[in-house]
Image 1 (cartoon, one colour):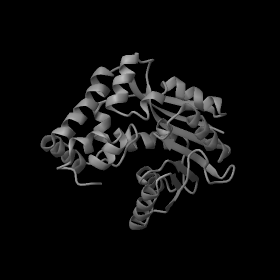
Image 2: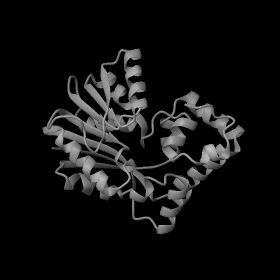
Image 3: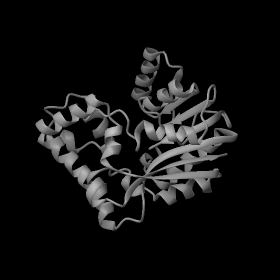
Length: 262
């Protein structure tokens, strides 16, 4: 995380939303629903002791380490960012949690066919830049899952088809790389189904302020409030994001938790 109190307007406005939230605001859990959603997903895919679990797009390892600690599973995380992988491996060593992380591409996972009991992706597909890439990533998730194993995901999605103006506003104020390729929750369900995920379960959830607070530790909430107060550029960006997400987009933004079997 970088020093933020004196950041210029350009340094605040230029990063994409997820980079801004991570590097500027210091938030460590970026997927909708935070770890409570991870736990619901883990229950839906029946994560248990000694099961082999792959977390695709594991980032700094927060969710993967949580799964290994709480459920006793053997977790492998894979991420395209070498920096994030190094941070995740450091966290595993520091905490003594049995999890490992390596660099890899969600579109070409560096694992054998059927290697894992469970394969998960949390707010990863939406970041891949195109719907073709999303399809390829799900194909790879299915490939490395053993026959009869479980595949799961958490993704931000439209609860209903949004008007073009909302898509334009959300793209400009939130995430220019992900909003244009965000699917409806039904669309994410259809994507998993089309790639051979069977017995698919879908939980549809609302977006709200409570979801943001659940994603943050108390000190992160206090730090975020302090930054909003002292830095006008940060205040403007956060207010713009929350206006789109929770006011203009009310009734449109949600997220889905998806679980099924190979």
